[in-house]
Length: 205
Image (cartoon, rainbow, N blue to C red; front, side):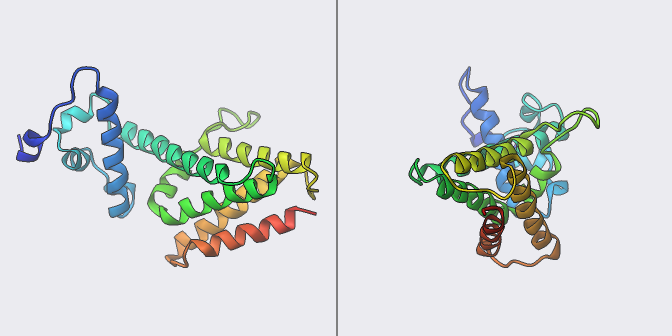
């Protein structure tokens, strides 16, 4: 057993969820340093946490399960960032809260390119062509659509129905982010945030 594994204080009985969180946090940090999720390994994550690889298998059956868990972890981080951004805007400012939600989404995507690629690759699923996709990505689209609906209720006129507006805003922002990521350009998060504002100006009448 390595020194770093020996040095780590063992979690007390009942603290399994704490260790699971430490594993996911370490995997998230590693993903920032590595060239994509393909370089993420059980052994590397174990080393970062300071545990034996076998300890990871108590929480994740294999590497694929770890990657899936990491994607869920990152969606949780994004959800918290969006909620925090929205909470900083007065409740009676529906348009401002929508703008804050979309800005938080764009900033997270630009600040965490590897995480964002992992998330969008594991963000939705469809059981059949006739069934609406499910997953955290769809949940975010629904969240943005609901924000548009609140804007309409507050008197802000939309050019399209709120549900459609949510899809347009999400797909537009995601597409802009994906283009920057695939091109290797690093224009800064403001480039996508400004683009999101342009999208909003086209959606509102």
